[in-house]
Length: 325
Image 1 (cartoon, helix red, strand yellow):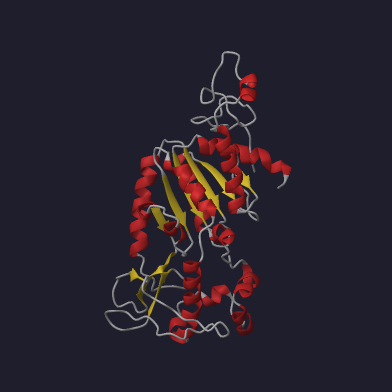
Image 2: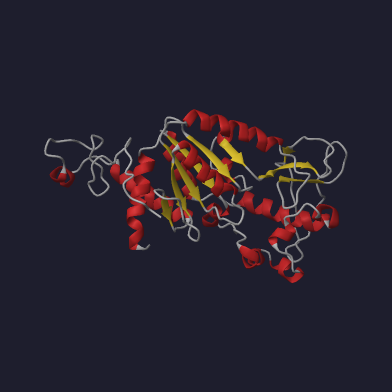
């Protein structure tokens, strides 16, 4: 880890330790440490799905609802393989760190994610405090659609030929009209996505944002790039409109507005480093710490912070003196 990033990790730990509310905003980079591909560029996609390189099909080309009529087996081979991968993959320990941070906060946390993998639910986050802005592979809808219903894909099993990436099992059908069913995922050029489930999540998100207005809000953004900027725009708006502090964690695109915090690290590495400092600040005062304590004998929590022995930076305080960009 670059030594110059240390002060930024300390700053992130300070604001998170003093937060009342935590907005967790994530893109595809959040899943990389769990072993999931992030499809960054055509090469990243083709590395995960070699048959599509032979066909000259990019991720943007493949993530299009037209394939469900053009080649249903290929469409479900692609999405079925991803569904199976997400089911078999365990979310990395960074999810548990985030959940633990939120547990003691006055307003808890809300998750805003563009990921369709269902890993926040798998990591025991509250489904009522979650918005999946691009939908979910764990839910289905009619391809037509003949109605606006969305139903669970929990019973769906898709067998995929690994050489051709075509589905070889029976494809799911709409229970009303028997047309082909598809994932309730917002794709490129998608005019038939049924948005009601995500719209309900959006209403709960808006209500939570109104609830936390005026509180000490920290936005922890992880692995969200600028190619599809929905997550980054949401983080920026929350920081700007609600006066929150943005901690942007991204190894390639870490830039942030003035007076916010950027960490050019992967999600798990950054979360573990921040958590180690938060845990250190919460430890009981040791003899060596007492030697450095305030002459009046103040204890940690009374203005003495374990981050480099700084004063007035503990829970409930923010160090906003520097620009971390």
